[in-house]
Length: 116
Image 1 (tube, rainbow, N blue to C red):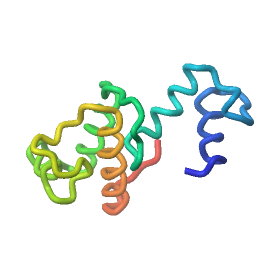
Image 2: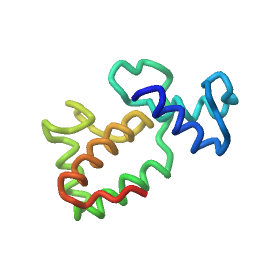
Image 3: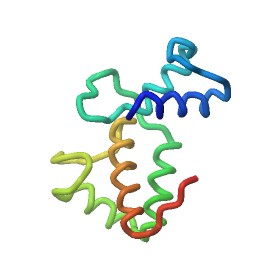
Image 4: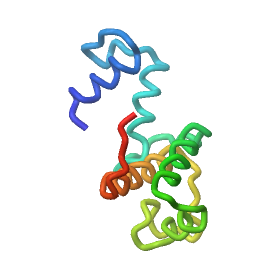
């Protein structure tokens, strides 16, 4: 993600003017880092998934018209955003981000994407 986009995200999230990431508080910087968790090459500390991320995925499942069986089948498929795991569960924020980004693309392809 380009720096300018991340700065805009930080301004929106912190509700104040920010021109450098050095201006972020420790808590704000932690939130910004959580948004990157799950990207390729992310070897940093991993955050456990929260109910908020699970709820976002649940809403995406509902908009796609998927039941739990369909969702589980997708997670176990070769196109799973979680890769080839024997038990593809969403445990970390990185897992949730990978699933969300893939579902967001599926929603766009289906014409069901709504930016909120």
